[in-house]
Image (spheres, helix red, strand yellow):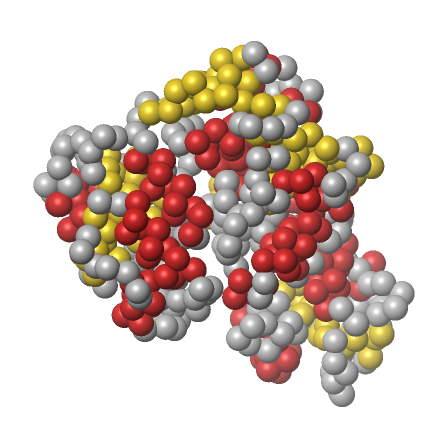
Length: 471
């Protein structure tokens, strides 16, 4: 593709012609090949300008920057994040114009809701998925790297979806992606709001900023787009005012109301719009996820019966109250809960499906929001019969320092500290008796542990299965 097909009129070109051939785009100098454009983004830890020379040596024929640099082929832009999004869209031939895109945002519930919507829609349509756990282009699955990937990856996936005949795309939209303008040039047919609780304050600095960033999704709808909003959430009223066409849902309030008839170890039974709906998912918060998926697919014209039948099928969402089979007669669940509210919901959920003990294993990630650590320690202690505080992804922080912040100010009478996560999981399962539930929280679907700046293979599900099989 020629450069002139990718740029806006206000971009300033230095030492480069508009008929330059462009073969690829990247923000990572290590992935640059001959004919690529390198975007010198300034990140939280690294400045892309420090890697310009490396990118040029690897074959980059153009640098995009928001700072003038002499004697190199350069595009000078005012907003490099916007330029990255815009040029990626153009390079991959504006695939969003041929897709019906459903965006889901909120602190918790995005992944499960996206899987539910995909599962319902794919009974009638070819559907793609972009989310925290995996990406699906209509035919092939790949592991997700970011909840909402960077524009070159995002638009590449969307382009593949178009090539494979996908009609609907269900995608999780993170607050980071909205702040960094990754989805600025997308228009959403549906925008779904699940809830808002404390998270990512290391990035957003305040809950108000976090909320307002999420709100950007609902201002980016198509002309006939509709917002689907959880009205039971404390921030639901705010999100319901952001767009012209709105459908609300909830167990207490909303255009589409649900009622929980049964919530136990075998799943959920709900009544929604006079229909009795069964699901293998457990917990009240999954009732909200089911309601969100129901409201979204109903708004797209699907009939109640087809939605009901799809939801009745067994659905597994990896790392979201993911049950680990065992012969000991205990419940073992792997869950991604890594925020105070998510941890509370997960513990309350498993508490409601057993009359025995709840044993919780969790830690907190390093280089992330430190304010939530003592909150999560207090929640786990209060709601669990026994807690194992351990390491999560410590990254560049000292794991023991993180643990100290988690347990700061709480009585440790039902709390055990085992830094090694594998040992903590083994001990928790060894401790459990028939009828008890072991909740292993924080990492969910992740198959790695980040210690320092290195990533090691570590899968909570695998470790729990090994521990259970060895008892």
